[in-house]
Amino acid sequence: MLSSVLNSNPAIKMNVEIMRAFVKLRTLVENQSALLRKLGELEGRVDKHDKQIQGIIDAIKSLVSVSSNPQRLIGFKRD
Image 1 (tube, helix red, strand yellow):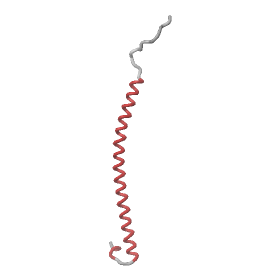
Image 2 (cartoon, rainbow, N blue to C red):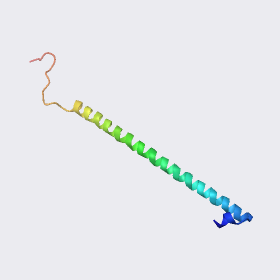
Image 3 (tube, rainbow, N blue to C red):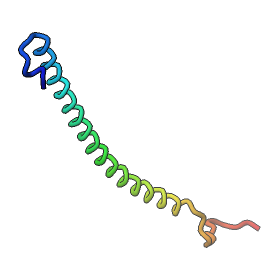
Image 4 (spheres, helix red, strand yellow):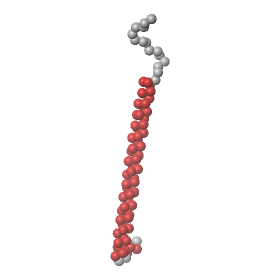
């Protein structure tokens, strides 16, 4: 606050640097909040994909699993 009241060159330079620091701090906070928002969106997408992938894995397992019903042989049996 004192640097904005004083009228010397060093005080003016210091006031400009303080303002630049606050602007940079504000942009960092805005970027962080945007990053957190994007991260939340990404988490939602990953959860959705995890469920879909699990469904695919379950379908593959059901196709690959050995059934208890013996399959009928095709063709002729030779004695």
